[in-house]
Length: 302
Ligand code: KPL
Image (cartoon, rainbow, N blue to C red; front, top):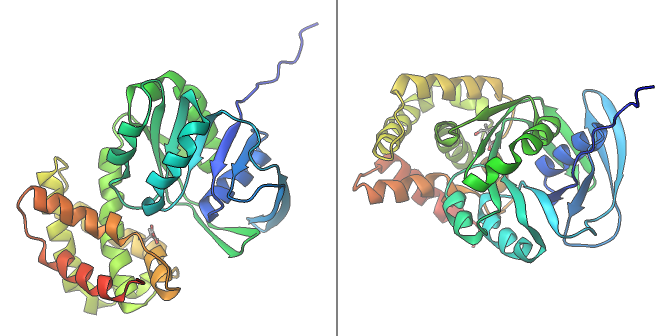
């Protein structure tokens, strides 16, 4: 008689306890993938997961099993390098590491820290999740994700990483070259996030005509610096993508609006700051991004 064969998935470690990390953890757990959490405090961790009207209590062990072979690192851009430095001694020689955050600039910082057999990936997601308290995560908007390998070593474990990320934050589009998708997401974040943070408004407010001129300028300058960095976008394609995200997330506060409202550090340096650094390298001026950057810097927590 044929034996039913069970697929065995490798153990994944999700780092931190941010909303996207807990969303991925909960969805992996539900789909039967082995998952552990790497948190600052040790001991078991229980949390409540709410999605599509269902509530589930999830009980997990805090990462006890080293070395880590498969890691999802969904922490804010400014926390990535420190987190990787702390993880390095715990990582297997051929570990696979998936970064996921808003903004750009971390990939260049992380690649040189890895060993030749350690794979690096980036996952960009439009899923919405938030934590009303430290042990509850609400899946507030069903989105999708884009995944891409960033070095040769990543290709050694392609199937396993893709399958797991599909279960964690799918539906998933796997891209042979993820850079255009990252730049497009950067465009959205470089327009919506700083404007909503500055004016302390919901994303939908930006479709009120009074922001049109600012949005157009930010997009024009974005297209210029993207082109100089090897990414060719038309003004129209970025305009319509930004307008679409404004419509789809009209009732949401952007992550940067929330960071400023709560006096937390924001990803400004990895969004507008990244664009300004690229512009400097190509001797370009971005007066609109520069102006909004300066205004937000003055409002940033010290
Ligand atoms: O990514 C976002 C954020 O808030 O950080 C959206 C909602 C897409 C707006 O930029």
